[in-house]
Amino acid sequence: MTAGLSRIESPTTVLGPGDDAAVISAPDGRVVASTDLLLEHRHFRRDWSTANDIGHKAAARNFADIAAMGAQPTSLLVGLAAPAETELSWVDGLVAGFAEECAEVGAQVVGGDISASAEILLSVTALGDLAGRAPVTLSGARAGQVVAVTGLLGWAAAGFAVLSRGFRSPVQVVNAHRRPQPPYAEGIRAAEAGATSMTDISDGLIADLGHIAAGSGVRIDLRADALAAPAKLRDVASALNVDPMSWVLGGGDDYGLVATFPTFAATPAGWTVIGMVSEGEGVRVDGLRYADGGHEHFR
Amino acid sequence: MTAGLSRIESPTTVLGPGDDAAVISAPDGRVVASTDLLLEHRHFRRDWSTANDIGHKAAARNFADIAAMGAQPTSLLVGLAAPAETELSWVDGLVAGFAEECAEVGAQVVGGDISASAEILLSVTALGDLAGRAPVTLSGARAGQVVAVTGLLGWAAAGFAVLSRGFRSPVQVVNAHRRPQPPYAEGIRAAEAGATSMTDISDGLIADLGHIAAGSGVRIDLRADALAAPAKLRDVASALNVDPMSWVLGGGDDYGLVATFPTFAATPAGWTVIGMVSEGEGVRVDGLRYADGGHEHFR
Image (cartoon, rainbow over all chains, first blue to last red; front, side):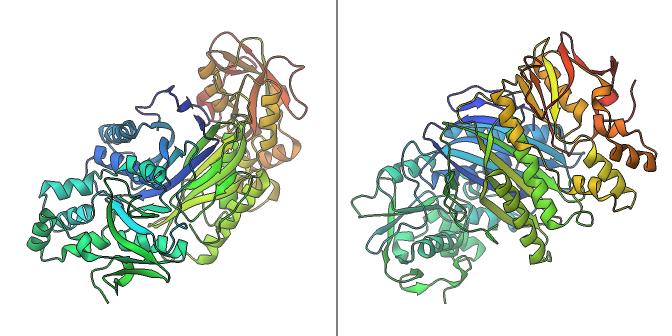
């Protein structure tokens, strides 16, 4: 992955691409790291998304994991395997997407690896800095605390549903699928506000809150009225004959953040309180268990 | 990649697998990072190597990159994509291989990602710590300095040649291919001895020294008599009717280290002086240019 990359010197990049390894500054004395492996057809489709979109989204997925720890993304390492006949313009678009998403969050592409393969594969590793804060994990939620969310819910899932049925609009939901915009800064804001647990919503709200419930050994109760789908999402759902709540509760890929806070008052502006933590296990909506944390029916 | 992994607390692992991201200590205030994407059939074969071997080697490749910066490997992030029918015992063997290679070098698997795919794919990201030292890059070689190497040269290439022709022995070369043993500790030793440039030998001695020659803007002259193949390698080469020097000069995958040092006297014990740095460009053996830095003929 040397195409389009050059040595960069920055506050966080000590030594950029081109050597055996990159050197990134970690002023905090700790580094936060997350990795993902993305496959064509399974994680992205070249007929649905541009190369630029795919680069943005692959970076965004990983930076959302860093933000969900309460950390600032600092750098990205990228592996690309692609068929020999892949057009250079596609690779350039991908590299630009990575670089642009990095710029958005104040990070940089510091290294990579390129190889040949039958299908396009991407590996993405993001690093981040905690600036002295404790990491916000899955295990700190306690009974009596409040659950709050920030970022879009269900929009990328609606976009996926629209694209799956052969449509290309409405553009708002299609773009939410193609190029999610995680609320990165809210991760640090939540950590500073004393969030006790946090995760990004990649598998769907219920599934991801399930990870907090399991990690913390608590029960989480959500109120459906706090999660009402906005009009646009209801319109799209109606046109496709889908329950919009299945997108709101089960849709991943928007990479919003969900966290628990000690009290309602501690919840930062920009976060919506959607429920409470109590003793027990699992995640419930208006007292009911949601099947498989990502499928379309209550049980 | 939660199979076989559990939360680990160690001097370097602040928060291990199981959360959105791992947190690794970076006492130096900088972190060294390298990533690789490995594909079945292209980078490894399941009929040639066990899952355990493949895990060891995938980790070793990346740790060698960290060592080549003069750094201590601290942690590994792994992505695995595999067909649904992959046997769990295979995955367990792979995970054990990663963990064992980590243990060998004092690092730990801190995170990962797992996904389904048609063929087996591995992404590996290694992190390391410089303990206050400057990174040893490709760009510091200067005319008048000496070139020295440590680790095996050509043994993995001989093993590959043996396996390619359908043989399974001699075991020394086959094992060198299956499970290389990079001289990790020598990377730090070289850095402490004042190495001016260093790289691991992954593409072949000539090719990798070519990266130093290009990165430093120098010419590198090697002496063939300092690189004579040991008897075992000559025997295998003779049996296969191959010039053993093609393996020594062109064979990658042993992950030895090659470095430049200010003087002969500064070269640490355990390193063999094989040549000199001078003004100019390129890599020569006894004054001759070696074609394509990895192929079998001088020109």
